[in-house]
Length: 123
Image (cartoon, rainbow, N blue to C red; front, top):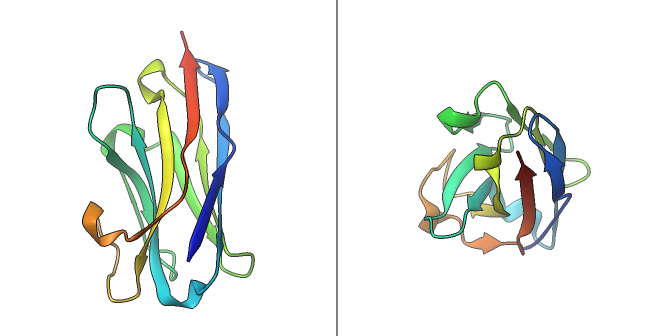
């Protein structure tokens, strides 16, 4: 399975961005797709995840601002980010977990990773 993330950029605080993750290869072998982010000097954290059945989970600090969605026909997962804050600045990665897992928050269970896309929010 290959993942390609895009949609990052620079935006002012309060602005919006939409990240896209395109999945290819043996997509049937995966279930959960997550968006992780890593800010400079910080650990990578799970921002949002969604299963093939559209069960979702969001990091508390982004609830009400971010929304994760999935188009199984197009093999794409999206992260709509609204009301962006400077603390949202990070490299965002999409990752996928095999079908043996449900809506997992365990980073090691995400075995497929895309390249990161940088999101910069200025104050």
